[in-house]
Image (cartoon, rainbow, N blue to C red; front, side, top):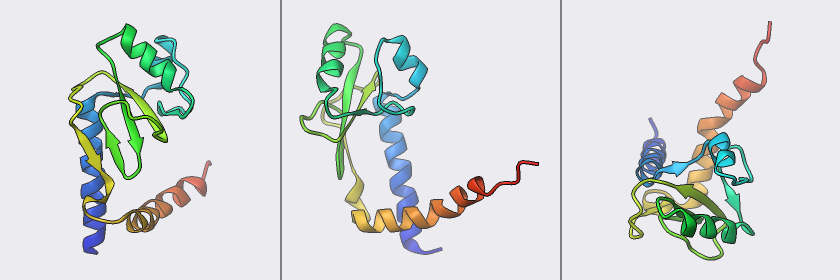
Length: 129
């Protein structure tokens, strides 16, 4: 196996554990139940909804905001991030994830494409019979 593929998988695993520890709320129906309207089915909130999330967290202190400001993901609100998530887990604002600890962003995208393209192609061309 290409050592870069292992680094990609390790990075993916670490991101998963970071988001799990922080308690990312990603289920669309759960967010709708909380009267929030995410921009994607996976619970992403894009720029422009910062105030809605921060107001919600102020009124509901058991929640906090995760901010994605590539190449970093912060376990706190960061202005001008590209993506935000609601979270209900460990609210330690010092927690952070760095995509570039093993590979630079270009390598991550190239290897990620190589890993996921065959899977997506198989799904797209599946036999529905």
